[in-house]
Length: 332
Image (cartoon, rainbow, N blue to C red):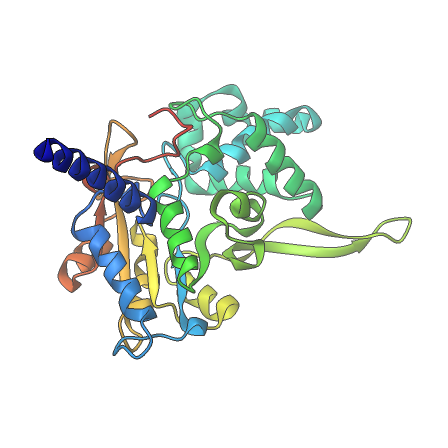
């Protein structure tokens, strides 16, 4: 009887201990192992008062790329999908597009002709979708699109395709006194519409590419900002450290990306004094998401992967390191 009682007590203790661990685990969607341990260890070192690596809260700046780092980016960047859908919606107001390239090729479904237009053609389509309206109207159009558009593979709203492990990481960092920022090549006004709800990152902590806006007054004297087709700043590649310096004003101690477009941001973070964390998300899970890196036209990870390997930066293997990819409500 005593042995049975002891066994029951042991089982109850194990269940309670397991439950407590699950509740205390700040990164439940991350598999136990080196990657998760490196994150937890770094946070512990920089937040322990009196420790050799302690960093004051004011200096705990963490920056994250968005496309391919915080949410999916395949088969095309989601902002490009928005722009193309918007061009279709605006086509009735622009009959001249039926005879103008690249609009003619896109609207007629002529992929060969559209491909011949190259990157310049795509930028022309994006500019048409993003300009000629006020910033308030643009925000409304983004919100409306997110409420109706579905990803072609997963058949879910695009803003459901955020990475659950990275959302947990953002929350974990903020709970430990970090200030989290998005630093992305995507359009800043596109991201600010939904980033706070998705990631807990407010609009003022989103750094992205920007277009020129023009202040204007309507007939009643009401002011607005009109979006133009002129590019003001590209927050990608070497532009990312520039954007960080211009908008944030502090060098990060923690940075995450997923592609060669993030290399300079990681280098800039690593070049600071004291302990640093540089991470890359590597897409290795074709079943739950996508598998791509060096040869991909979207989110190419080549030079940054070589430098991460050479310098000991943390590389997240999506297939091995993540228990889940998307939030639980998303069927994987």
